[in-house]
Length: 257
Length: 374
Ligand SMILES: Nc1ncnc2c1ncn2[C@@H]1O[C@H](COP(=O)(O)OP(=O)(O)OP(=O)(O)O)[C@@H](O)[C@H]1O
Ligand SMILES: [Mg+2]
Image: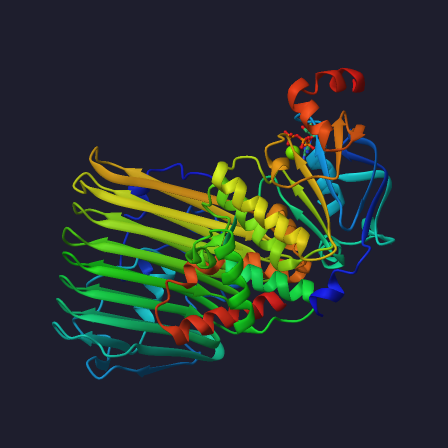
């Protein structure tokens, strides 16, 4: 499959009245959001408001039970798909806390992932070249390819690897859960450039979860959503982010309680 | 899944030794050292089954290694190790021919020496092997067990001063095999011993690797890998007896279990005696339970009788595949079955890297892969 056919123009992620529980506890209480290719949406909200829950539920993490609503990618029902089917359908989740997987090397993992998503094994030389280009661009030392996946990586290194995967897998829609947290200024710039390369590489949609406007200065959002109490409580343009930074979430937390 | 400590001091458990089977009572299953073993599946190895079965022993040796087949009366046999339980004594009482490998002083064996033990029948068979690595010599020995057998044996490794012995013991038996074996390594001053045990096949395998030291500076590294399928009982009982100062031991055993009645037992006994100041020891056992109905018993025992150790630790954990690992791989498009294989392979990866012989590592790797396909 060529890149251009993977990133079909006009991809859309539609989240409709999504309700999600962990155990008996309802966490998402009716989320509505549509992300179209070419758009970047920022979700901002206080700790514990359910942002990661939204990200995990869309990706299909087994701990989260969908109790209502729909998630559609280009009309296809993501909630009916297994985790890996969702990824192959074009969804990508950069995790807030990427998991350490002992004994699985980065290069082996990436090759398996790329093979699965593309539906065929990449040519070894081309893959090695793409990997090197990707790692160089993100200032990741070549030695990391032989290390175990995320094992002993610093917080910043883990985040860079998430973006490396984003660039290699070229999804239709990317959900980035606090990719900016724990990054120093240089790493933030490097990671932001990666996200921008991804945005420029085709017709893709980005849902960017963050606490800070810092990253939004590099990765300009088209829309900003305020998340509180398990739902979106306000929407606006980039200017909303600045207001949040100045005023905090207090007003929204009170209103949603 | 069990984690417990023996009630009696370790140092008293291994005290009784004898070459004569008559000195040991027939186990009932209530004894500390037999309580995990399903005696009814031993096919009489513990009740004096006469030697009637056939096991062939073939040796493909490096040029530098002297190979001998000797009778019971060879005075070199049994000097490093005295049997400490009934089946070991039964094997010692019953074997007819023993294999002795000698690596002469300062010789460096140019290639691995492979001892292939092939079972060709169902009756009980007994064996004995002695590997002598003379001072400053270096060798790699592979014990390759295959076929169908009811087999009990003792293996002695005598590693001389400054010598290095690396051993791989592969229990690749057919499904119906029963194997009860003691491997004892006796390390001279500054000797290095590396043992890699891989147990995959057999209805019941009970392997007891032990190490003791005759001088300071001995260094033992015992690694084990097992894959237990439905109905299999694979038991590894380790004993490291530190009785000399400044020696080191490191034990890492990992196993995966799948299927109904798959049972792994791991006993890790380490004794650091009063004289063994400066001992550095660590032992680890991990079990990966891949399905319901599998059971792993893991019992690390560390008994420290001196106040002066360089390091002493143990760890044991049995658990299932981590959902978070599988989720992460699946979230990158990797299908569940493949994600599972990658994670299990990863679980064993660091162990497999320790097998320095490419060919053998590939073979073990392929075996593990084949187990995963089941
Ligand atoms: N696996 C889980 N088990 C129990 N509770 C959970 C689990 N996942 C989330 N929760 C709870 O759901 C709520 C929302 O958590 P979530 O991680 O989605 O918040 P968040 O908005 O991402 O917060 P942060 O900004 O700190 O990352 C919290 O109260 C949290 O404790
Ligand atoms: Mg979060």
